[in-house]
Image (cartoon, one colour):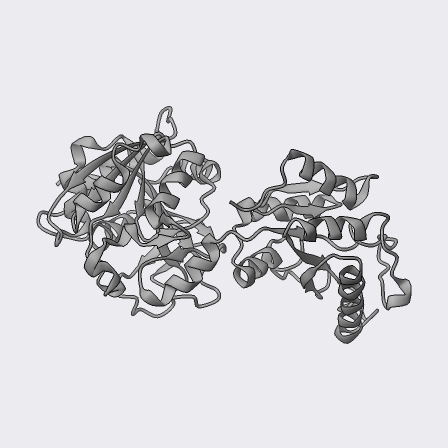
Length: 417
């Protein structure tokens, strides 16, 4: 066993120049027993959504993020996966394979492929899809200088059972594969940037990489977290399939600020307190109609501190939004939902822009891929919030919402596909 503590200090203090990885390694060898009877005939990576195997979505995402090579670690029905994807030419990414017995654990598969792994690589599970902002992940990895960094879904909505606890320094303090300890908050979803030296911590035998290596990295404070509130989607079990199918349908949507985008913005510290105060911005109704004609769902995200400051009630706000949606519908548009933050400026909540809480609430409800969903706003806070959600941002100016929408249409308005 290497002197890991000494090596760790070297890696954390003097990393030297690093080049972002171009190789992704995908663990795809298990039997997928929680997907039976589907996996009695097909391996889990080939379960199809909208005419594409699930694994194809992962491979295309890798290509979009600048990866050039994928090494698939296969076991169960490996020949079906190889036959489906070949060398990857049709997808524009080079695919290689390492085949091992189907009952091997993740650690054993990685150990068998050790000589084919690059110094730093992205490690993924074949059953989770998450819209990966790799540039931001790599920036975090370089800044923290860990031996490995795993993506953690914050799990504030109790989407699944948590298995980690993350410290304020972005290092993982507890990893519990059994998910039985108290105080866990967050779940490992894969998308791990790791140095190949982490594999030196694997004991001999048929072992799990996560169960054996993660606890050692935690003890040495060498396992970092990239925390996300964007829901991930899975083929890990039958009960996740409907949600995953809806997400991968990629139904087009646009996120909109309200004041200054749909209606004339009141003066600072003033509010639209009733419908008589509402003034549509020129062209806003036409823009909503144009979006609806192209099949887009329009969703509004708006700060409304006037509620906390006593200028209007939640019921008053609901009446304004009902009338707003009705007039939009009469003009041929469609506002599907309004998310609002009623809190005071200094409340410290997670929903008031520039915090991105409303983005993630809309993401979960409408199964959005925020990295493919444009947000249109009118001030700096909107742009900061969009960036925090990894959401493309467009600012309105004198041309208003209609000008932005027409410009997006001329460029080929994203459809989510």
